[in-house]
Image (tube, rainbow, N blue to C red):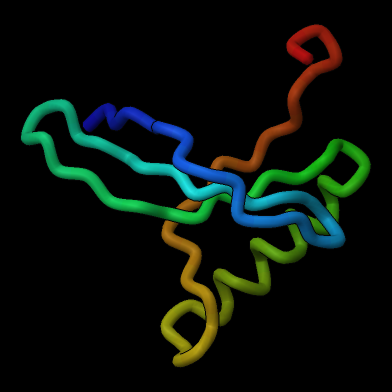
Length: 80
């Protein structure tokens, strides 16, 4: 399934990046859901990768943010 991603609003900035609220929509059936999307700056990439590993290990624990997926990649200098 190819989903569409729509920016809804800026949620905040932390030590290693910023978080946006986004809506993912399924064009096939019109369903959608909201999700927090965390982004990191180039110099903080390693910290975000470490955070992802911790969240994946804690998946299913109560009162811990659930990571539903990841797309961890570094943006090249040319694409900025």
